[in-house]
Structures are given as structure tokens and as C-alpha cells.
Image 1 (cartoon, each protein chain N blue to C red):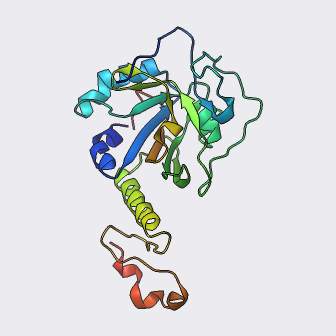
Image 2: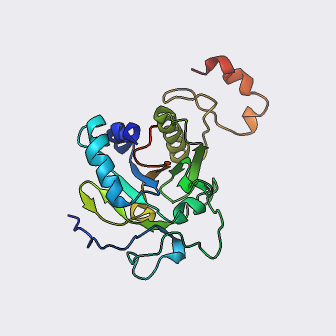
Image 3: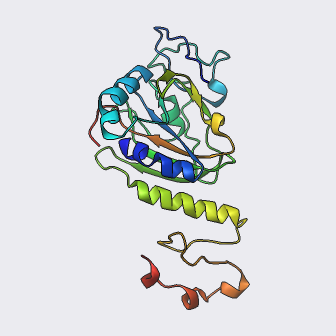
Length: 151
Length: 85
């Protein structure tokens, strides 16, 4: 979670709020913040660290691991209407790459601001060409985009 | 400014949507299985709302997903505090 805390100001600049969830109590969250995370990130964790000891939230989001009694590494991008736009679930040993999450948020924000009139091709980064789906683009994507343009 | 929730000894836990008790902060018994277990999180669909005890910048205050309605939200689950990744 320190990786998310470290990029919190970048997320806030994009208008993104963060909630973390695990099966640990909120008291343990405090200890983890005070004794470890605050040594990795100046000022400690700036967002709400939620406690889901019974796994009720984890079940609703499909990340509850019954055998281990834990929540898998699930990451959800939720838009201002409360709709899930992106989700990614990893088993515990592999960490997320936050820069990819930020890229996806920027892409979803662009699509939303365009009213759904623009789409982002594979590997899109802010500033790159977007696609404008419509009759003129059918069968013509190759004229404007190809995989070598992916950064 | 936030006021601290009264910190009791009950083991409070997160609740989802309409399962939230009228007193959202009432202790629930950990390990109790909900009557029905169903996954409702799907891309393109409304995110299940929830309320949970939370630690936030020095205070213990419950957090709900709906607290952030109108904002983008990054919701991150992870296996446990003091684990290694």
C-alpha cells in the first residue's frame, strides 16, 4: 500500500480518492501505518484504510479467499457515477504496477470527457492519438494506428 | 473536522449495501457467514456500496464508498497488513 500512498498526490491531481481494504482491524492498520508505512512514505498513509474482518466486502467484490481467510490483491477503478470501469485481481505474491493504474484512469477520464466519442488504442498514453469510432473508421484503423505506435 | 468514533471492544467489520445495520457501527460477529454469498462486482456495473471501520490520518472513522460519490475512486484490496508485497 505504500506504493499507492507514495503516488497519492498524483492521484489527487486526477481527482481520485483512495480506499484500501484488508481483513486486518482498523487498530492493526494504525500500527502498520505508524510502525512501517510511515517509514516508507512521508507523513504515512493519507487515505482511509478500511477493515473487513468478516470478508463481507471482499465477497461482494469477488476477492475473498475462503481457504486462507484473506482478500486477494484486487484493484477497482470506480467512476464518479459509482460504476466499475476497471478491475484487476492478482494472487498475493505479485504486486501491482501503479503507473498502469494511473494510465488506465487517465484513459477512462478521457473517454468519459469525450462523451464516449473517443477510445484509446492499446498502450495509449496521455497525448497520444485517440480513436473516434464511427462509420469512417470501420476497416480503416490501420490507416491511423498500428502496434508499433504502442510505447 | 472529523470527530473520532467511540472506540469500543466489539470486533466491527465491513458491511455491504442493504446489509448495513441501522447503526452502521454496531459490532458484528466476525466469522459469521452472510445468508447469501454473491459477487456483484462487474465492470460496467454499479460498484457495491459498503461501510467499514477505518483508520484515516490518525482517526478511527467508518468509511463508505458512497462518501466519495461524484469522485473517481481507486479501491484496493490486499492480503494483509505487515505482509511483504
